[in-house]
Length: 263
Length: 296
Image 1 (cartoon, chains in turn purple, brown):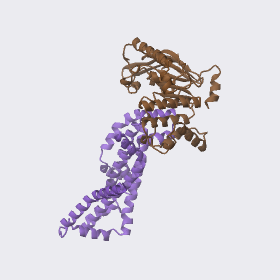
Image 2: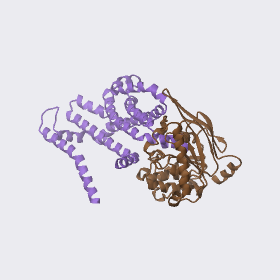
Image 3: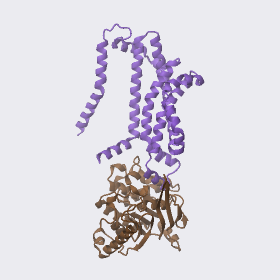
Image 4: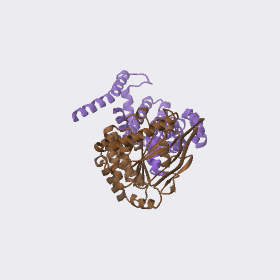
């Protein structure tokens, strides 16, 4: 039994890693010996990457980027969940705000960068505001849906047992909406990474996006490619962390769904 | 708990009083009178079953009693106090056990959560109540499980344990066993009889099953079709000690069941063979196949 699960785990790992390895080696061999300035060999990119991304460079560019991303993301999460609960709890508020929310969500967040620059300047605040303004919508709209979908019987049960106010919020509303909230947070994470880079490309003195643009402008093409690779790796890492948190927080939900499918 | 309240309610006062209750649903151009005029009462420590044709507004009535719905007119009194919202001395067990337990809480925490709202309870007392309640329904071993890991019958036991731990004066049960299989149902019926005798709690048990009503109740209140009034009240003079085998074979049981059945048939005839008006709340709780009378 145990061996079997070990084997399936190994198989899973192989499947997960297989395609990336295949693609990387295809890139490696296809680009080997390339003399095109814009398409340097992967070996050159990796070598440059090792030289460029020193500890100091990471502290100077990656850390500020990630800090801004996390601050903006957290801000969007808090704001989106809080507003979502208010809007989702009161049908009249929802009816009033829904058209506006749909419009705001439909505006591509990158176009907001120049606008936000006007009042938030070009510092960290602007970049965090940009990330918040893009990430908040999926969280908000999913929270509204989650709060609306609270089971009537469960709500009646909570009421009849005097579970109200803060206890209701913590034990019923937030928990009940958490699957949708996490769905929104997952969408927001990829939007956040995009906006982190874009906000740094407009006006910045540091950051991953800034570094990539700098490399490109100074024709340090292998450096630019290494920055893009690093950005991709960062995205994968964030997604993995997110998945781990979600699995823990929604263990009950996945179990519930499995048990429903089985019956 | 219920002992002292029993004394309190004994002084010329009922434990639960439903007076002239009427509920009309308005909306979307529809005007549905679910409950027309209901008056009945429960004495302290009584176990009363409410039975009526499907779609007769049982769920509406129960929600009004539980303080979850505002009646259009009339009132419900708990120990003389008018109910305006869910009262602390009342616990409800719903039919849909799968939707009334918190799926993100383990069994133990599901039972404990309502107790946390009672600020005067210490942590030790809470734990004691939870353990006692889980023991009373035979679920000590499942305390650490999630509700969805349990069978339907066990989930409904958790809901019952939660109600028991809450130490209510009145326990309301809305067709609690309609969704479990016959074997489990018999076990749960006996569990309710036993808990009722042990705790001395007042129980109002809503069902569409005539046999269940006669087997469980000290008294059966028969409702008419919607718009609902009380069709008849029947005292069940079966011995206090009941068991599935002998009680159901008792000629007196058969007699009483026939009486209830006749009354329900009469109620249906009064408004046509089928209930014409269905309230939204009842439509999904009473499947047509389980309509009363199909057993008799």
